[in-house]
Image (cartoon, rainbow, N blue to C red; front, side, top):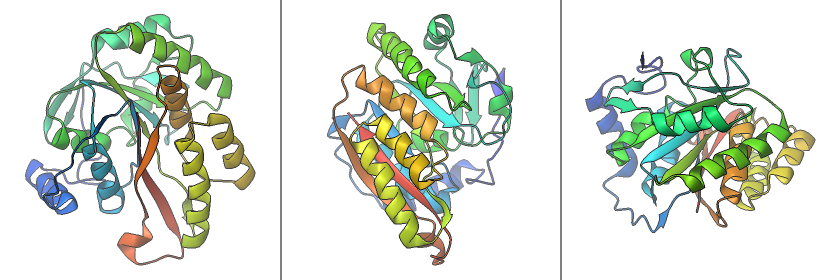
Length: 269
């Protein structure tokens, strides 16, 4: 089974040529040194005109593994709490990306929580929008797409241990991506202040602090669950550094700062 693109022509251009033109405008022929191999990335998932520059500059700053586990939040409410795609491949305007079936089977075999389920993926954009960005920067990789609906913090910790064990025992180089936007629809100054607090917790690799501040300050970060799982996983495989590559809001595109959405690109290594 092939998972066909559901949001091409909406969140991002629907043709290869249009994608290349947009990505070239974002990068402007900059030469990124790729000084570190990323164990993980935090990337936004809005329409490319708003968040694409943040995402692609972050991706371009790091070497990535040949298998990429992508954790995204569930916006539709469909499917299971932790849904792993059952497709054989995902299609994009750049072409087909195969699922890493070996890692997929290991996850299904060893996780108490993650189950095969395609309902969660059918109408969800948070993973799909990452794929053309990754294909433009990295030519050959496989993916493991997982959508997260649950707010069970203990499950985030347990899945972090499960995924870390699989990664450590695998011969493959694996990068994890957490797909998330930050504050939604607040004035620029408020969004920036809230987002800095969330970003600082991510840079500290501190899941407890991240979730406590999200609850205390009502930070509308849609992908805090995928981000928490990624951090828990990476701490268990030795990630010790994180770097903010780029931050901006939708207001930087629209010029309207009265109600913005925040976007951050962060590398963990």
